[in-house]
Image (cartoon, rainbow, N blue to C red):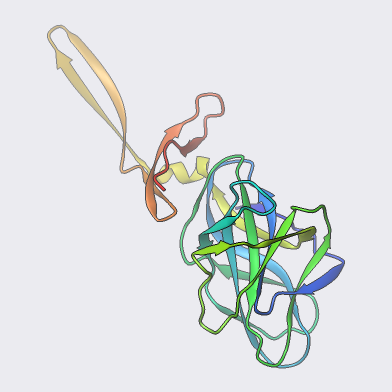
Length: 218
């Protein structure tokens, strides 16, 4: 498995209770997401609910509208010291090589705050948007008018690189004969992956040898 995001744990913390906070990170290669991890802590004893999520990045600090790519299951948190929380994604998002995404944390507040750990960054490295989290809330499909911040959050995605995932696409060969000439065609069969809930066809990049999405229907 491979990671993208920020594995650094962070030197200070900031609240994500009823507040979506996310950091902007770029994936260097295509792949399929499997889980997310973040460095979290509760402000006191008890339990609270938390979800992690992924939004697209179409430019801007942050973009005027953020569209949800994927989110994790809801999970509970009860640790009062800094600890890494890993939660499975509810879907298998396909990431586009060289594309930036916002990796987010969001939590419920009953009686305690939930904090995510961070380091200082530059303005535009992160975003925040006020959203009340009432379990078992899902992330908003779109967030409009989020504010920009300058933090490097301790959050990342675990994913399967596209080169490994390409094995999920069955490759079939067939011979076509026409007169005296036989021609061999290799065709990619069952190669529909999913992007934003719609199928995305794969093709092999000749320079890198990596299978990547060739088209997106959004």
